[in-house]
Length: 78
Image (cartoon, rainbow, N blue to C red; front, side, top):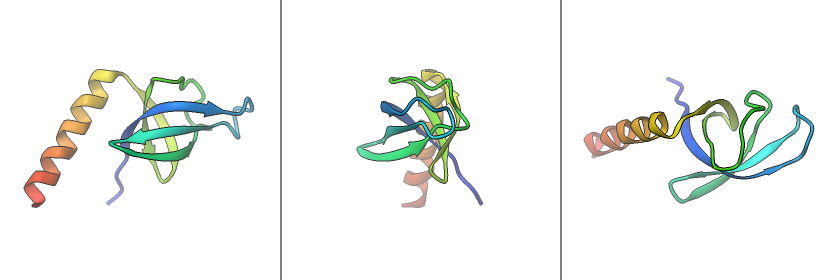
């Protein structure tokens, strides 16, 4: 099963749409993420990330709902 996780864009590096990347926060963990598939992403946006690539920009409400669902899954697994 594949899973994409929302994270918040903290900073963006580069101008070229194919090589632009971002520092993205995932609940205290920060990763460098490629933005080639989500060129519209801006600092402060939430992006849906799969395998190190942002695949979509989410609004804050959708990101919160998804994170709440993931937290529930984690609680149920424990």
